[in-house]
Length: 109
Picture: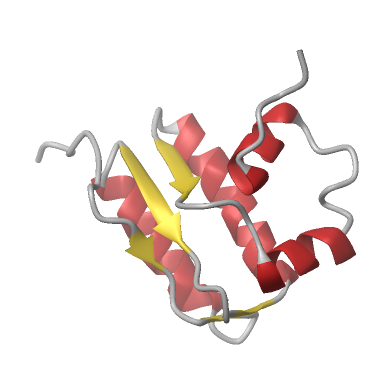
């Protein structure tokens, strides 16, 4: 079975991205990565989110990278996701790759 180069439509995550639902979200993201070489993920502005989602996305990035694939967010983290990144200390000492993924910022030159 061939793998498409790019999933054209962004994959929209469910509104609840907390520890109670993260297992189902994990399965969906793994399937998405396995079926596509590159894809974008959309997060709603009014989502419910906790640190388990941030951990899942970091693991998904590692998994995709190790398989020679790429995932990205449709837009920079904002609202509840940005708040969790701040409160979890993820923004402190963020690598260039992390800043590009989460905030759509280019690295320092």
